[in-house]
Image (cartoon, rainbow, N blue to C red; front, side, top):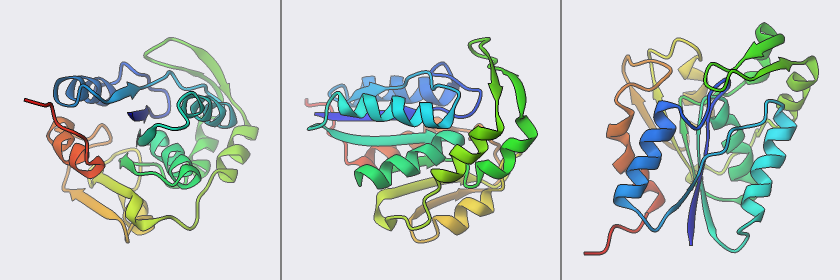
Length: 194
């Protein structure tokens, strides 16, 4: 059994464009794959426990991980813990350096949830950082026009991994749907049987 765990980014949701496009693509082209995309808890430690609990429901299954932005950072942690493949889309590399600008109340534009970003969350993010990564386990996709994150941080951190660097674009990853066949190939997903 193949499971894909898709981890959305900061202040995002399973209703985000990339999550929805991935869900629809998998259903149409790889219907045997079970797709998981939960609404992520706002605290980093809570989010990791939530994601680990999902994986624990099917411990003998094959798990692949996908993550966008902050979800890419969480994906790296999980890919190293479980030694599995991960696809990262415009991933956050040092989110603990950026979160100081978001301290205080946040409102998720998808869910309207109000929550607090605390100084403790920065400490939690830092503790999840993976310094040594398994180079064969990652497909990392960045666009140089990312207005939120410095794409060069990802290029540097994942320089020994499979990298796709697209010129221009933005943080949402323009034309993301065109990348889905390559993602399926990286995971070596089974095709629809004729």
